[in-house]
Image (tube, rainbow, N blue to C red; front, side, top):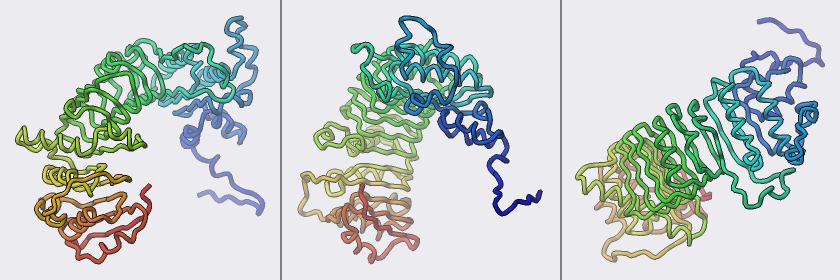
Length: 461
């Protein structure tokens, strides 16, 4: 190693001595306006942003400091009498800077993210950006587009109050991508998704689209492995048929029919789905991780219309009985919203434990509020679980988390049952609702597993 002699007041710049590949990787983690400003750090950094593999254009941070990024802006702005008033605004300056920066980028760009304002849709800039990237950047694989609410210099009134700002992307422009995120748009066409044979990851969040557009998107993305549909509206049914799909996340949706046929699906996450249980159909024999929650809905009134975790569990149980086989043979992890103080719900849980013979991880979130329960006076909680003893509990289950623990009789008996009967258990996490004192007595119980650790916490939120 070369020795470096320095005076007491000298400091060595280790970062600038890093290879260009490392420095450009660092710059790719910054917004583009921050990456460009790194030019002033030292000559070593000059122009390195042009070789960054990822660029993020964020309108919230680029409108006001735009003059610090590029010079001589006004000399190139067109004097069109119709567009000039809009070009003088912050939104146009943001779009103009994007063109300049993309044109100056000199290396392969594999990933790009745009956070823009609604007026960029009206002017047609978004489509032009995508065309430019696809035509110039042959290595582009990952793209994220997000339409922001009006902000800063764009806080004036919308140009046309009744105008619907739709995402209009040219024919087949997404065909080269392997990953795509779209957030906060209205879509009336699926043409940009035609021949998307390489797209493996797709996230649609806060998208308004009808059944025809959604169906067209899913039918063209034949290689899709990871699909997320979040807080989106406009469609009445969701039918997903894809043998390549491995991860599916559905959140805050309202549909009349939900059908999933995915032979190789491994992870299924359902959050706040409003759908009649009779119109639910799920075929996923390879499922290994299942989660069902209502995190996206805060009010108790709204939750009454959401499909409950025990509704879905009941569906799986009934389907197994109808087909006389285990439809979830590979399920190893399950996370549910479930009330351990409700006899009906714990009956579904016990049946699910008997059905899921490979289950090793169980996560249960208890409700914050109490509701009416029907009870059988002759059936004590301890006796109930002893009658429901199965191999999943005694030989498979290893990790259990109970959230919102209040120390009520039925939830205490369930925890006791796991501690004293689960011989393979390694860790039980009990997250108490307001005080760990309600669970401290569990620590003194005899443990069926010598490797069991019990963690008590008090922070339900």
